[in-house]
Length: 239
Image (tube, rainbow, N blue to C red; front, side, top):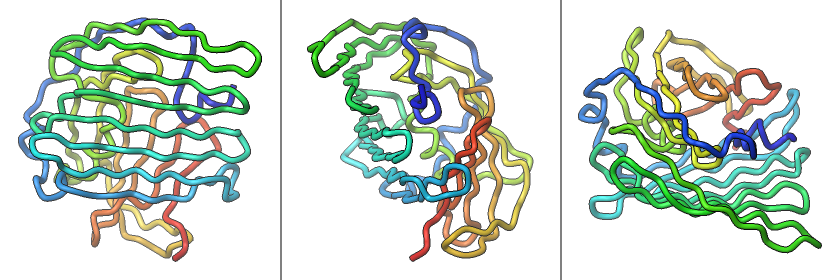
C-alpha cells in the first residue's frame, strides 16, 4: 500500500513497542518564540515531479500548543488531516485526531494521553462494508513526544553543527513508540522551486521512515524534507 510512505500505516503494527531513548535537556532549550506560532508549506515531489503538498503548522493556546497537518499525495490517492494538542512544557501529548484517506477508504484515529499511556480508537470506513472499530492502547515511556511534533522540535531547537537531541516518539497511526535522534550533520546549499537556500542539514534517524530536514539559515524555515528510502521529497514551492 502506498500509504506507508506518508504515514507508515500497518494493521500488523497496532501494538505497543516500548524502548529507551537517551535522556537530555533539549526541552528546556526550545526557542519559546518559535513555539508560539509557525507554519511550513511545502510541495510534495514524487520521482521528481510535483504531486501534492504538505501544510504543517502550530500555534500556542495558553499552556498548550495546537499542531495541525494537511498533506496530499495525488498519485497515491492519499490525503491526511491531523490535529494534535501538546503541553507547551516538554511537548507532552494531550490528544491526537487523524483522518487518513486512501482511495475510497478512510481511517479515523482518536487517541488521548495520560502520563505513561495512550488510549483511544481506530475506525476503518470502507464503502459497502460499513464502519469497523477497534480500540487502541499503549504504555509509553516517560518523556515520550508525538511523532507529529518532531518537525516542531527541528524548527524550534537552536542546533549547532554536530549537535544532536534524542527522544522517544509515539506514532499514533501505528500505535508504536520508537527511539529517535535528530543530528545537525552540517550545512548545505540546496536548490528548490523557491530558490537557492543556505541551510542546516538535520538527519532524523531511528524512526520510520528516516528523514533529512533542511532549515534555511536566514529565516529558520524548513525548506526541504527528503523521505528516506522513497523517491519522495517536500520542497519550498515557487511563489
